[in-house]
Length: 235
Image 1 (cartoon, rainbow, N blue to C red):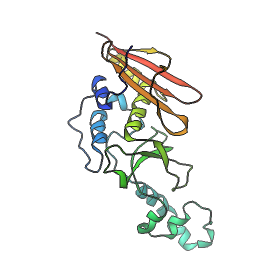
Image 2: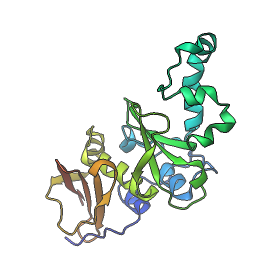
Image 3: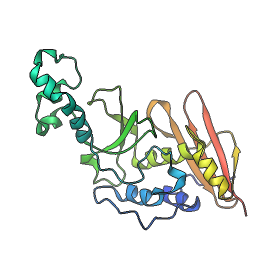
């Protein structure tokens, strides 16, 4: 099969039966690409268990951090001796919120791993004006300053979200939804020419489409395993 790996992610969503939902209200803070993706993912069963919030975010990392800190502020104000120097939240407790940018940048959060919420995904506020900004992640065991790059671009993150859904990284939602809609799944080897997009911790993704056979390719892999599927629409 001759897969087009350069097909825009929005075209893939259209092919998979995810047209824009007229009920989605665009968020003017977000890059156009993310608003367009969310308009297709909004209230769509394919993304029910996806690692992206299909209604746009109302949270920034500062707001999440502030909520966490306020739970402890009164106690530490009464017992300052109990605040250990190596507590990762100590610098934020000692500084007013206006000075937090000296410690870490603020991120607009756009997703988390479904259900558990152990990992948060976000875009730096200062990058929101870019068309295809880097996407970062923070694990719950990391310090508030521990945001790291998850994907080199928003496109890469969205392709990860789609491939994770299609390949059943954690749930079989994607396969169940698509098979009911008349698609067939065939497990395959990762094509040798697949242009994998590198994400964090050796995770990598690739997707494509062959219009002649109406087949979508989805690949999700790391150093230990690989999931790859050809997903074909029945006539």
